[in-house]
Length: 383
Image (cartoon, rainbow, N blue to C red):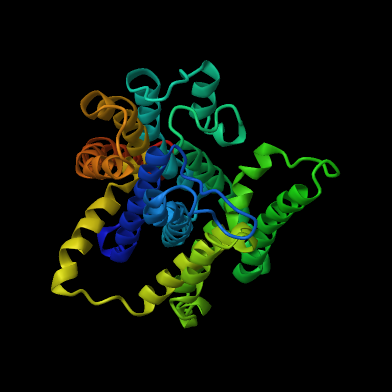
């Protein structure tokens, strides 16, 4: 999607929805000191944590926003690669570097040396693993600097797997490649579940494997397959699936423990279903929804910068700014209202980063590519 006329507008809106969901999840986490629900034997425990926890429990589904981002990433990356007539993987990685890495490095520096909202100071190990984008594979650095950064590392590692995915699709087809990616992810989860039931009798699942891109490969591959269907003029199977099926299973998996291991796959399929339906039948806008749609598109455009900065800022507000003004004993609803009130200031900062960091970085990458292409076009001996 290099040119403006090639943009599929609703993808920006979905990015906006995704970052709003992630934002709500982290607001919940700052309010109750954890964004992961507690489980009983069969169901999630939302009764014994108070009325505030019960009413705000829907915020825990904000993790679905990450699944949306991964499906969208697979869709957009494959769409962009296929539309580039060069089909050059060096060019692909070069463009991804300038799209992702400079804004990311600025955020790493910001939360290492300027804003340090978390009690444990950053270590050299934290900095090195984050710069190398392997922090998701190191348990000691996984949640340091900025807990959201693990997904950026996974995303880049999924880029590294993309040439293999293309090769697999060329040889076996996209449907078989999707089944393989899903089987790998489910095998990792199945081993983890069995390990829980037979604790002490099975080798522990390595932490790096659990947090590796292989666990999230299905969502990314699903997005790429949807893009391939779109490019080939094929109607996706998911476009024939009722819109409510996979979202319903996603909601159930957040409540019913036996379905919990499949939450990620359900959320990916729910996202894929929405994309497949919108590619066939774009939603009509009402006057009432027009403002929301425009706002979500603005949020979607700045979603990467928003993702990079929002969680440490929320944590700093919750741990330092709010207690200094309102005292340490705040009601959960008060914390939520204050954090939600930070949405527009954080979005404004993200928009500035998008305009003055992201866009110039992307433009710089395009200039390098043009110079590189021009250098190759020069006839030897004449220039």
